[in-house]
Image 1 (tube, rainbow, N blue to C red):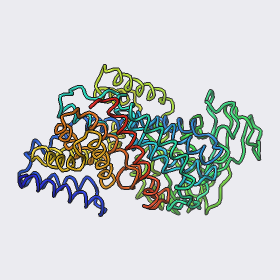
Image 2: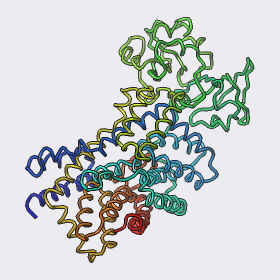
Image 3: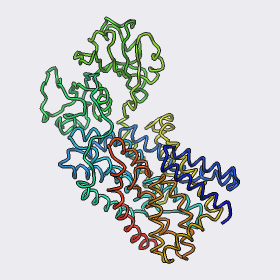
Image 4: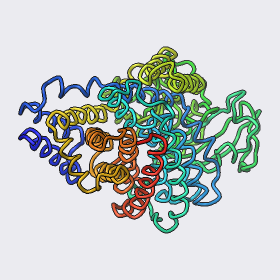
Length: 590
């Protein structure tokens, strides 16, 4: 090897160490490595920047927009509410989480799927007194293996498919469901493994993050929308009985007050439900399909609901509305916002919103245009104004459109009518045209750090090719395998699995791709089993929390320790490795 190859391997080793043993962000580390390779002349500018135009990387970016639309329309929330229900045991709860998550992750990028489900599952576990440490790690593992079943299930598959089309003679790449031959067995093994071993290997502890009770107690009145799915359901079946941080005080129906509401009480159209609880629960309440705030002031606002959010504002002693009721002070006309609830010194104010007389120090929960915060953050009318994150009401009426567009995308990609990139771009365009999400939300939904990691890893992978480092690493690996295809395949899988446990999955996949190609060429066999092994192994990051983003996402909320991942993840990695090494050559023959 020349100095360029040694320099490339040194850069890669340095990046590995930085990612494994420091808190530096992966995009910064890999871009620094790519910059050094460019500055020292190992890569040309075209080679270094090739990853930023790769089809797989662009497809990942577009799929972030598709996932955001499903979230904005409440489609994901609706699915989780319909699927989770009431668990009978911890194992039943795990199965109710893992099975649908594995299916969802096969068609959506698994990172946003887990991000959307973490708060939902936390509330669900709190509602039924379940330990989140028994649920969050199965959630992450199910999302990981579900993503290995289809081409679009994880960014790793898309990235490697882009490399297959650009670096090999297989110009069409892999089919939409081709990976299911190995992905489905791996998914089934993972689900069975978790259900069997979790009583002994998963900890039963409280999360590191404490969700303490909020001193601000609000009383909120919601109305059951006509013809909604809640009509005819009991309070318990509708999921309104044990809401975390909130409880149902009473129901007002045709002028009658139903106090001490039974969980078996049926809901009717236009029932007014009075809830008491903390602010975070009010945000969650607003997202329940079939419920809307009872105040008619919302419908007199100038802006559509999709452009609004929830804002907390503390009334100052100089506010002109102090001493007046909200109706008398014409709050909506003055501030172009509607008061949803009022909290006063931690005491619930149980009056009709319009009849509440405002006092200095009252905390108002208002719904208004997002510009309310900018207009009044320095106003003398309020001591403090803060916008509640993720509080825009979902566009439930467009959930069916989002589902239809998702089905259209999957159908076009699966049948080969369009490439995955074309199908994803068409879907994103349709979702924007139908206003399932706005352009600003689409831009914010893209995780640019993930894309930079992928693109930078592509450039470093190019250096492996160009300098001959890939061939040198392949020859070294072959020296330990007696030059037999199965032994070499096993080696490739476990080296990739170890690599992805130390750094990110996309970076590991891209860096191992040239090594896998070189090993197959040296043996004179098809490279496809080796590439599939790299794809599965890069996603099989079960043994550490740092190798896969979903593991990191559940690490803190689940209250896990590093050793928890090792205990349950190492045996699972071995099982997935054995399955892949056996199945891959049967489908993609050597």
